[in-house]
Amino acid sequence: MAASERPRRRPADGGFVTAEAAVATLTLVFTLAVLLWGLMATAAQLACVDAARTGARAAARSEAPAQVRAVALSVAPRGAQVTVRRTDDRVHVRVRARSLGPVPLAVTLHAEATALAEDRPSGPADPAEEVPDDRRP
Image (cartoon, rainbow, N blue to C red; front, side, top):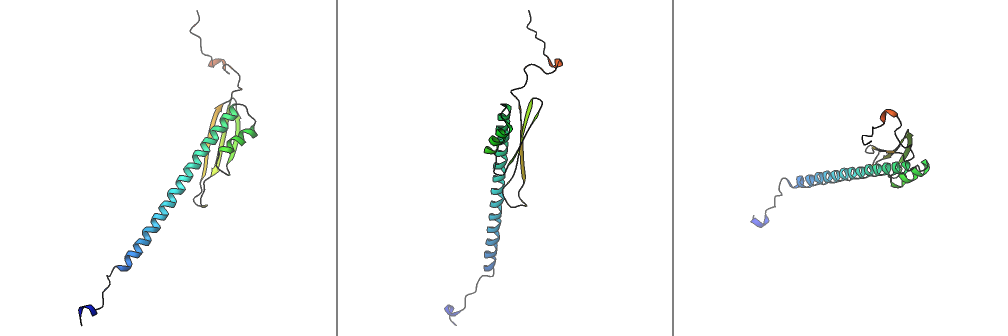
């Protein structure tokens, strides 16, 4: 039998390279998907923070609650809920939203901003809070 007629032997690990490549590809795709989901969740959280701040500024200017909600929703992620409440001389705006992604990965994001209302009475509310004026002649 001549050397050219001998059957060629295949390497014993020929199939393992394909299996390893498939596992590596799946791992890379999964890692990329998780990174993209995290990036989208971070962007939605930042949008919630911006919406709460924008709403608090609008509420501090004594705008109507419906207008405050509309302003905050214009900045908030889609499907967000905005709550506006007032306590004494402060306004609180809370924004809640769900992150994008499959239900097991979806998380509830929220942000709250507080601002001092501009229509509050001037001067200290409590006489104990008065600061003595040391500049009197």
